Length: 242
Image 1 (cartoon, rainbow, N blue to C red):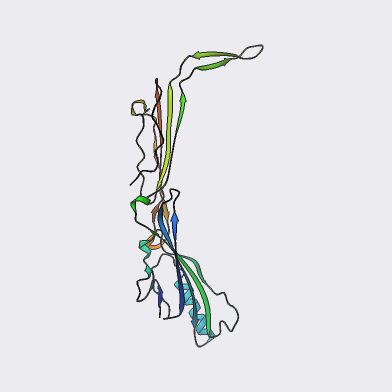
Image 2 (image 1 turned 120 degrees about the vertical axis):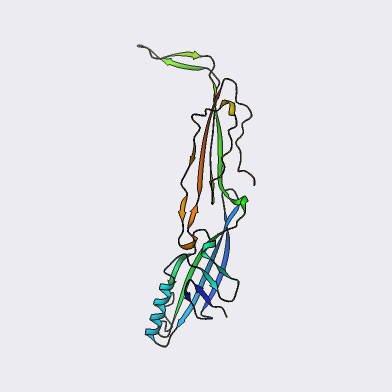
């Protein structure tokens, strides 16, 4: 006979039925960084009077008014510590009472509750949630301008037979619990080191309770290159392998 606890709140033995489901959280990279645990709880409070049942309902609502507490089935290995989750255990559906008939509220009251928790897999290969990079090539050909005329159409004039070859290596990445390492510049000899920003964004403070933590560490890079000869051999790099 199961007995459920949520933080300091303890249900009576055999009071409720618990259905536990798990689903993978798939990142844009096709990796599984977290697993979503969902606890669907359905039970019945029982008392010897209407006042006693109302008191039990109030205690149940207070017991689930706080997010981020631990949940467990006493005497089993089924349970989740909020500190082991990403953002804490969430009471996504507080106690509600779906049945208003069949003498509900007299000496018993049926209720339902839903809890959710994201638990990281802990696999380093899933740490990078997003990764994108592109390379843009410009320059190398002639440059011309259009001279305005007092009458008639503007005059096209070539002012430079050849221009420098330029490229931009731009990308961004998001890490689950820390900043990914940006890729190195492809053409170091042609890099404009005075204008090649790497921007580090502030992570998100996520969740509540003991599981509250920082997530979504975003970093971006923008390398600018220029040379008199073509910039050859550059290909965008994919998410780094672990």
